[in-house]
Image 1 (cartoon, rainbow, N blue to C red):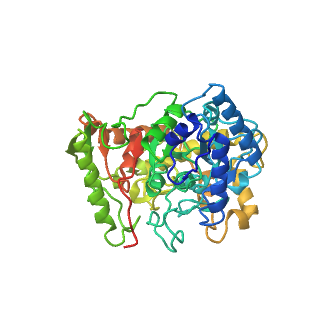
Image 2: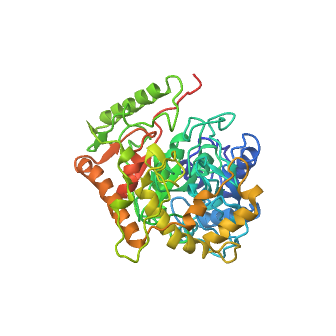
Image 3: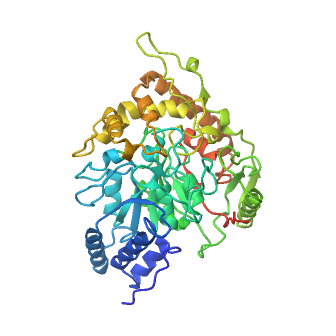
Length: 504
């Protein structure tokens, strides 16, 4: 068997399956190649800091050998049999069988152990995927302090955009051009940098879409409730979503089929080019309106104009491919999900007032703690609902998943961080005020339920009238459309239109 030389920067999961099925490579060879690339540029070379932990090489090679033997005997677990993947460090992985801790970027969880994988991780293993490592992320998906730099964690350091030499610029705005985005930064960077062909991330608002956009990837944020999330870290099942990332649409389709336990179809012309748009009704949002303001990102030189031209060129290609394209009006969501305490009174005299924990995560409309955006003093329906559920159900359930851990409660984590300030709260990020505030969050169950109903209503009231007439609504990747998708519980996708040279 000839082992074909692999270009890991361009190699897709679909191409990997062709190489494996024709005997041009093996899963063992793939694992060795990806481990070499990780060793070259994760904490050395370009210092991308995309991965927090890497599975033991011996264990990975043993798994790859077993999957190669299954292939040789004619047994394939799925169309992604023998393909490596990276997981955001929110997905619970066994420290026994996979050799991978689950830290969510927090050193307080570095020594926690688990004998089992979450149901979603087990689904990946059963489908024959090889979990290479755990990806860096905005610590606790942004729940630490404000502002918390997207892609930074105490465990993994600063995730770097693989397309920006020199890394994150000093005094960069939240989602500036040198930012990798967040909170699923390491997952996106890992795929773009050739550390793995596939990755999983998580999102409340923008945490899969934004880093995938910055990394030039295809990604699908699955809709609310479509992917099993028990055992994994998240804020609340009413907003948490899992996202699949890859270098091509077919890659994302294959991974989505696995994690959603269903068959999705992506139509193409058979050559990966134009096509598959026939019969589709596509709504378009004007990129001169639907973009991010300078308080969140900066567009140097003619960057913004280049993005707009690329957007309209893509729209023309959709038309050529047979789509019916219409322009659509939709109000920007800057104020759509703000509220005052008076909007959600206590349901009875025994309940406490709504929490004063502040803020939307800025003009992107994203959650205060979803890793993307800029803080303000406005209250956010996303934040208040999420923080209530995180404090009362999701965090306790996640921490109880560990077999052994120094941390069994939010109070334990706050105390641990305080006792290990040099590690948990370095000079660059010297606070854990969000965690402290969460301890005193007083949003009641009835208020949280009312807030959830309200933001879902506002999201659907915005999107449903448009989606009655179009199959897909399209906007720039650098836009707040993901805010409405989150509120309505809808899926969202991202794909590259063209390279962007920001050096000119």
